Length: 321
Image (cartoon, rainbow, N blue to C red; front, top):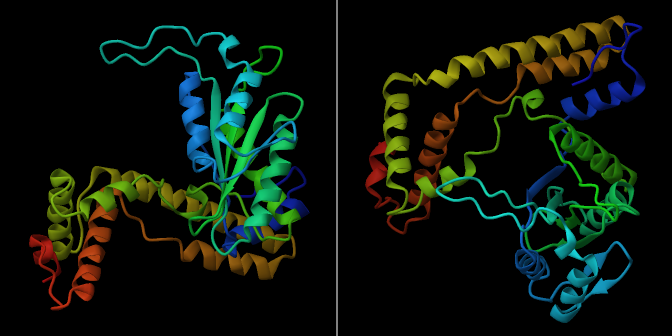
């Protein structure tokens, strides 16, 4: 969300950010998905993102890597074996591994129907701006899913042994920079925190999927059934996490209304009204447990519609009665 400047008003850049957010401009996605601590793991990841050589990998040196032998040469040229800390022993008895990452695996994505070539161009610029002349990198575009995305592998140490540190603030700036790159490509793109848009962290999707699978994740399915039963019977479910979520939502809503007031004072009444409408129509507040339950009910409803008999055979069908 925007912040009121020292003069009591928003800058043009802040106003544009507010406009994109309340108008729900598509959000960019940028995440760090891990990184190998062994040369073999790095090689395996390159094989994965290249679809075993079917896709061309681009490198920071301008090379185009097209097969497994070229991938081996790439790894050899990166001298990953010289990175300090990789020879520490693995963690034992449940302890976290002390081995150092050799690379960082990064994914940059935009929702469909963004043109893949625009995503690739924005990712290339992002890589050049952030890592050129410092950290070696390789990237490849994937278009086999609805959302075009670029996989990027970045060497964790530069040529002088300085490590690339990635924290929450770094990720925030990177998302904003990637969104700016997309806009330079003529694509509407935004980068705001989930909480500003009234959204929970996206950690329930896998649980929702597993809850909907026959014979899988019994505990999750049963939890979804129990919670859904309470929701249907009483219209609500007491979850300790709900109070904190409601408190956070109240603070976010009040913040947006404060922004609307400041915009009114600045003569931006039209945008102020958009902000108020946005604040009044944030997504429904649901805890992770409630979200799993609601999605599970929807899954059962979809299953019933697709069933030839029109009746779902899953024993969880009782939830929809």
